[in-house]
Image (cartoon, rainbow, N blue to C red):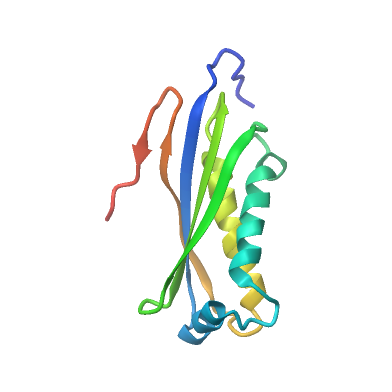
Length: 146
């Protein structure tokens, strides 16, 4: 674990994204709220928030941080038959929240898969990545669009 004792506490924020590719009929079920296990997006949002809070328990060298905000949002794309999940995590602390944002996005995506796997086992979680981060000594970073 890196020693962050001498580092200053600053406002830090990170956004991560994952995209789920699925059958159109599966996306329609999610949108209509007709999945047998319940409210897919509500449960996935809760899973993402909880995962962000538990990141140091899952990733061995992550520092426990005082998270000040976690937001998980969804964008359904019917044309592409995809569900984009973004997790935004904030803190005022000595180290960044990139791992918390990535963990939140991944857990939310895995939760969606778990809730709809009975109707679509072929869902693919893809493009898990850090979208942007700010704060700390390295400042702001944003992923370039390709």
